Image 1: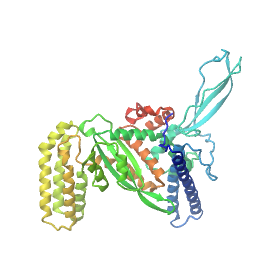
Image 2: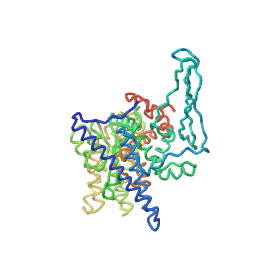
Image 3: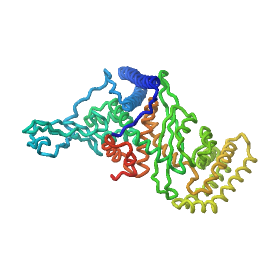
Length: 499
């Protein structure tokens, strides 16, 4: 059984305190959910003016809080929280097509006495499943057999399922995850779509599925993280997301971090991957914790929180030319500055060398850069320093030039090392899905909800980087993972999937 184990204190008193804190957090989520449901009911009863927008925000707040509660419940292996107004499970409508799967023992004779087995009944479990484009009901039929001689009872056990005692099949769970985190559809909108299909699947039910599914898949996200951190060079970036601040009715700025590995530009054999982490703020301690096992080069922007990592000597910095170029582009658009325009043109010549070097082995890339890029780079550096003496030191252009000179000094290692890149675009590309999703679901309900999102993004974006259909891979993985040994979890990674 693939499980996620919590690191628990050994001291009994510390263990009791730890358990009490976790239970208090689950209880706090339950109270918040109750409060949000009450507010949402009030807005629905008095819908006028701007209240429909407020009601949508409450829907999103409920969604993220319910995901967080389900994820914590699954990790702690607590019984599901029974809430008075939680929607009850309704029968799956008859109009959904049925597909019957019979699980028979295989043997016709009793294993105890050799007598003939006769059928005395059956147990049927209905599982709502989704295959691309349509819903089906998978009827798992398990005949109950008894021996005609010794009355021994025989029945095949029910297979392990992604959500114990749950009704969704792995394909449906994969569909909900991909719809939310790849197609940016909040759960309440998915619920509305399902309703048009004649399926009564409440938003809170879908949130429960997402929370429990991401908790089940957490070891797989950790495996992707280990793969990323084993690289010689990685790409790092972060982006703000709004998170509800408990008890205030407001939001605070939290962060989603990404650490990417992509060796395709220099013909590396390692599969590309993106590992996401969530934190409630932007303190430098977070990347320090995330990258504790990493040793190598890191492409990143000029975030001051990375400085301790560079000073430690275990991580070496590579700056980003794309950030430098962007500042000149902004100035040229707003001021039509000829100096900014020329800077952009000079930087373009560096990218022309990179275009020629792409796909070549590291030694060839380093040779091309030394012969062609280094003279352009050095000349650009001298030219920028000279321009700085001809303009006002307080102008936006002067600020852009000072930024460029500081970052170019830290970008210079790329000229001599063929495994490094001119920019940090690999990490920035991995942030696009979050930027699109942020426009649709506005904020995250809690740290637990943010961690669930980080797991989902890690799995889906890594599958996409490897040209693997995330729905097909997740559906197959969710069908296999409940009985998979945690020591062999690497076998389930997307680039090893033979769909």
